[in-house]
Image 1 (cartoon, rainbow, N blue to C red):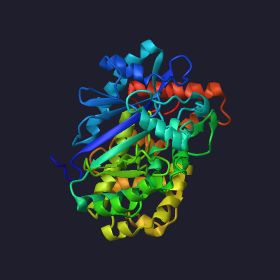
Image 2: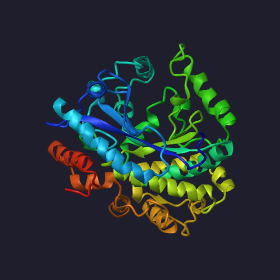
Image 3: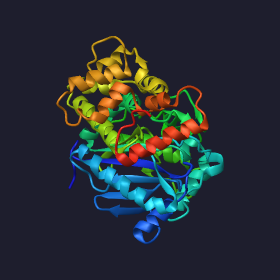
Length: 407
């Protein structure tokens, strides 16, 4: 049965597998899936969720197998699976680590690609892009899938999503550390994501998708340009597939869903769910023209959106947005505002929307995104031991299903 706009949702969350002893990455995802299924498989269904492999052996993905009608239902489901996964990892000396980047992984030396079924895809990615980099081997996201049922619904959803994407790091940034150093970026993951595909620029574009609002136009412009650019690097066509598209939001026309990929993963599933719920509430208001008209949303230039996205990648909730026309898309009354002020305005304006009273969202709005809370806990010039203490506390937050509010 085809789901119509906003009738079904899916969330996919990526977690790192690390050593219980020293938090170093452990490339054992195949052993976990084998323990679960009795054989090495790419994807295993467990009740209403699925566990699956990723590009590298130290990452697992958790997702709901079928769409759900209400996002908040996934918080308890995912928390239960996190605990189950940790019990399976324990005999291997491993556990799950949350967050969008491992704080001291060195991809050049430590990357190990998935060597089993489908490895030709990962090997092709590696041959073309060199996956021993943070933009490939060390970036974990939470992906939100939103259903649509026809071309018109896709057009409205894509237009609304494009204008909202730049505000999402203000809630979701969680990667301020790389190779044991504070990077000065709220979302280092997104910064490296912007440049990880320079050999094939049409695959990522500018992360903010182009203003394309019909399937036929999307296939003729974005997909065909990707495949044309790919051909000299991949004559066998191994990667000639819509999933090569790496923009911050990508349509899955065969599944009738738009996947939002710009969110850093959080310290516990309930925080990911709270951000996804807030995202959906604003998207619904935009699509319903409760905040601005469709025509104005569609007319927003990609370059303006990219400029705001770069500001929130850098400063998250503290980024100051002075683009008056952009602010008017959300009904924001002032001439400028920080990203956090805009989110506070939206939450108040949409009061009563399901899930906006989440305590996890309240922590983000009052204390800052996870990236801000990590930096605060680390203090200035943290040593490696300080970083390990904070990230072990994040692992404990994940196991407990609780927001991280400091040490």
